Length: 111
Length: 111
DNA sequence: CGATATACCTCACCTGTCAAGGTATTTCCG
DNA sequence: CGGAAATACCTTGACAGGTGAGGTATATCG
Image 1: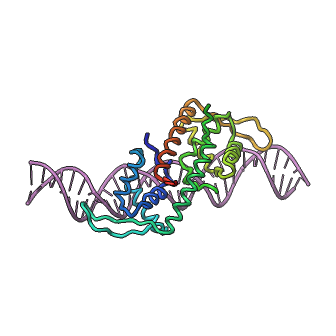
Image 2: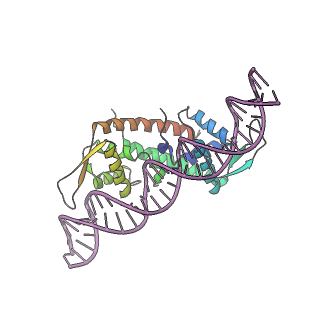
């Protein structure tokens, strides 16, 4: 099953920040890691990804720099900031809360 | 904690359908029930609610009818359709999948 | 009679997603 | 060497859902 976009809306930033907790990375790689971790069930569209980077940087949650060119084209690396780490923690709490609320609302009432 | 709107986006329809599984109801009441079930952490804005009703009805997931006027103003009741019940089941599965994927991506890595 | 609660509805605006299109570099194959 | 493919980045315009602000109508209470 693949998830519809609106379902993930609002979690985009948290997902990217979580990836950057493992160390600096660049767009293509971040997206590949996300797809892999999600079991292929989900991946950002490029436009979504770069829009998110811009937003995150403007908010001070990440910084970026041009890295050494490896194989292929030049890469822009992103690093999480202190503020980004705080935001990430808040996002995790919000996700925990979301699960509680939605479980109560979409309530399976099974058994 | 109150949840930001984007987080719930995409779940609006599922939440309403879930409420209607308990029987026909009308806008104000549905919203009150939702707020209550969510422990006050969340409630739809009226505009969101009525937009959703219209969308759901156009998609054939609910039907509506004017009910007996009780106390206060006239009420429009909504009922879930067979298609709505199917949709609800699909939404629940999607929610289960969402939890899995997001838990993997936002990964707490605690202990 | 006016305030308040109930109850419904619409419109313009904002934000995030994404299809489509574009640029540049490197590698691989023939 | 030439061209295709993979890597890698970025922008634009359109679209959909949420929502602030505003509007309507009825019943109740003081």
